[in-house]
Image 1 (cartoon, helix red, strand yellow):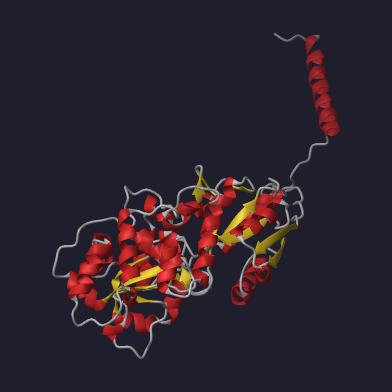
Image 2 (image 1 turned 30 degrees about the vertical axis):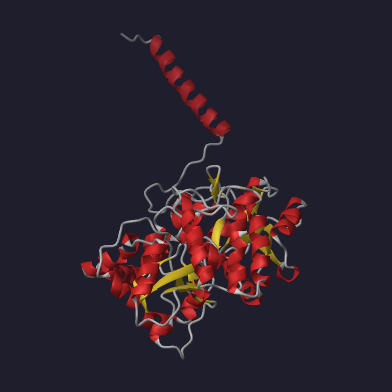
Length: 453
């Protein structure tokens, strides 16, 4: 119970606490938001953004005039979206650098941060320790969107060492007359190679309209779906095709064709008929089936057409039974090929060869510069040069091109060992030596003899 004497002390204590509270709030400089019942939110102070850092990147390429112009045009498009990336592209095409020349310049640090090289060079260069894996820096979505049929050949020691840019493989077509003969018998199940097909040098469609077109194309009748798998069910042995060819009495054309300028065309045939326990190919050691094929062709050179181009003056029965051409040549003669060859049996035995990919120099320091380089590469990876194969899953799936869909399905599968070469840092040097011999040889016998020496 309060007494008259204690009441003044209580009131005084309350006043003292109030004064102390006001003093403390003033010292701490608390800020109050006035008009709390208004709709305007309180002002939030955000730290100023750091200015975008400009990064200079050096890119080395080895491209002819047309290919170089395509890449320059693409680089300009990328620069519009990423102006902070200052990219300078140097073309070494006129210097005609070999693999050894390129390796030497890379070792001296003369080729910059990003280098566009032939796919055949990727693993041999990676083994030299001059480059760094790209998958450690890639966005997961971009990484998972790469087609195995292409990037499997760019892998070594558990890493991916290059970002695909140009995929221009040799495509193999079966003549319609040969395809009709296959319907008479049951083809043996084997594991043929794989590939994907082309579009223009523009970014691939990814709109809902493109999706609808793709879904409509992919949801066609079941016969088309079954036909799309027909190439996997064929017996691709040399003996089988030779028997079919010899049984075609009314067929006047050659058994097959080769590229007179590029050894790669011969490697495609060797890969197709290489089934020695599914081991990687060796340039210095051929399987029994490969030697059998070479021996027959050497003795029957009249059955070989030394050209990738189809002559419009020839009749259908005069064209190769098995026709090999590059993707770019296919698009330049598409109508003629479709008139004479069965599109449903199309395959690409070595889908990664005859293409180009970007590698990232080991000297490109980690951090901002390496991240900027990968940002540029990931954008460029959305595109492709004109008349080459789509190398991204989503763009391939959404294509309305029937050939692209067929090859895209094949490229979804992992490469077989026989579609690769034995991991050897010097194999590409041997490959280039054989290429020079191939070009110098004047007859088909001499060219084929290169592999039998």
